[in-house]
Image 1: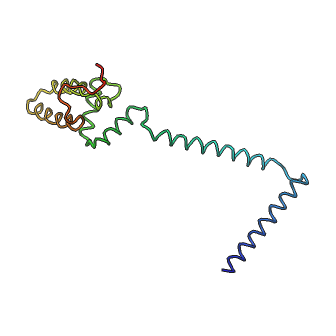
Image 2 (image 1 turned 180 degrees about the vertical axis):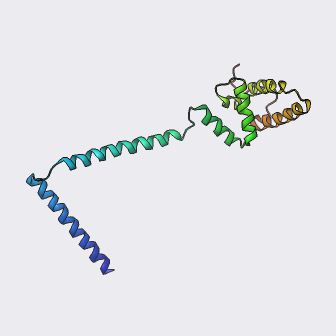
Length: 156
C-alpha cells in the first residue's frame, strides 16, 4: 500500500514540476502561444462535434421521416415474415404508393390494393391460396376490423 502512495506522490511531483516549468515559460514569454491556441480550437471543435453527434442520436429515437424506415419498423412491430413484408412492398409498388407504410394504417386501401393484385392472378388454385394468405395478413394487421371498414380518421 505504501508503495502505491509513494508512486502517486512521485507522479504528482513530476506533474507539478512540469506544470510549473510550463507556466514559467509562458510568463517569460519564451513559449510560442500557437500550440495553446491550437489545443483550445481543437477542444471547442470537439465539443461541437460531440454535441452534433448526441443531437443526432436523440433525433433517431423518434420514427424517421423516410418511408422505408417506417415501413421496416412496422414490419418488425407486427412480426411479419419476409414473405408478408415482400407482398406488402410489392403491392404498394404495383399501386404506385409513395409510402408503403400507408397499407398498415388504411384497411380500405389495403383491401383495394390486394383485390387488384389477386385479380391479376390467372390460376384459380393460386388465387384461392393468395386470398387465404391475404385474409390472414389482414387479420394480423387490423385485427377484428371488418372488411370494408376504415380506420378512424381515414379519408379517401
